[in-house]
Length: 424
Image (tube, rainbow, N blue to C red; front, side, top):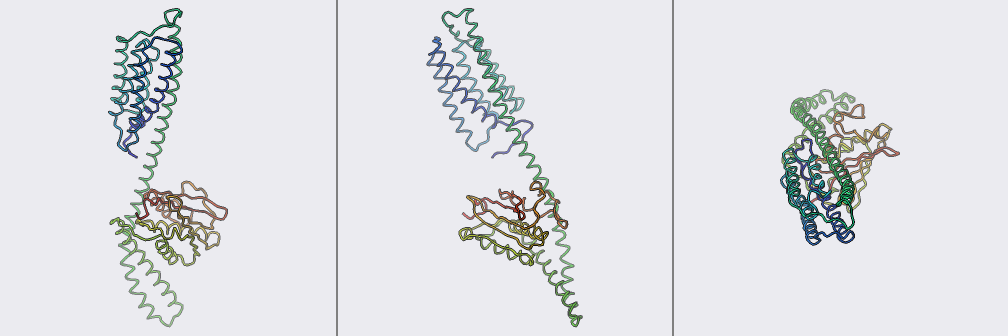
């Protein structure tokens, strides 16, 4: 979908689409009006030229519908051309049916009203000039509208009837299509608001990433110092079994910190290279669950994966593994709140989507909306980053992250399109 700057207006594409629907209504209404006047009221109007004009408008309507289905952006100049064709056809029809004295001449105002909600001031003036020129020409050149036999007051009653019908048509058209344009404006405003919120969130993530890179560089030196001193301390206190056990635990934690820093550097390099890993689903999940078990050995992770989905080849983009690990860590923390160690990872294919469902046995979300704000966490010890990063990763891959509560806990579903992550 094309995104263009919007300055309190909807845009040419929305107007061109509204004109396409309006054109279909005009073709139907004009055909009925011409046939009623000629066959039922027996007015002496030039039936063949009128039907020929309506037929040309129908051909142009098909061409315009085909054009709107193309990916090319619609410019204001092209929209003016559409309005010009509509005005020309309407002007020819009015020329054969009374010109400016025809009550339906006010239909020339409809494009101006719709353009006012969608186009720039300069373009609106051009549209108004087209309609005004057509009106002035119809005041000077036209074929008089025949009058019904026996009708008094020189056709005044017929004119009043036409004005009434025209009023109803104008009210319906303006009400319906103005509502469509206003709805398109609301949709675009919501889309712009979401883009703005994502930009703010991404700025926060970038700031955290910058700080993390600096911290990783600074932590490398003290970690290297501790890795050097811990074996010496163990040798000096070899007789103290309790201290040796604590030193072994501390040494393992230092190694874990070092591995995490190395993973951060490797992840940054992969992100810069933009080279995805090429694995099948089973291999990808094995690496994720193996890493998760190292990070959370106390958790009881259960994996549900069918054989067909397991063999599905993937192009694993940078960040997907970390997003899944963040969700698993959150699930383990949630289950621990109810003294449970159970975490369920269910992976399945649903049509053109691959779903990662992370199920916990915790108390659930207080609210399933607004839980992905940067720095917002429902855990007392949480930083509010894991879920935010998972949402950002899902959106970057054209997917979505959906959370819902169950009777036993909560379910977080990471849905990704296969067109993005599956190998061709």
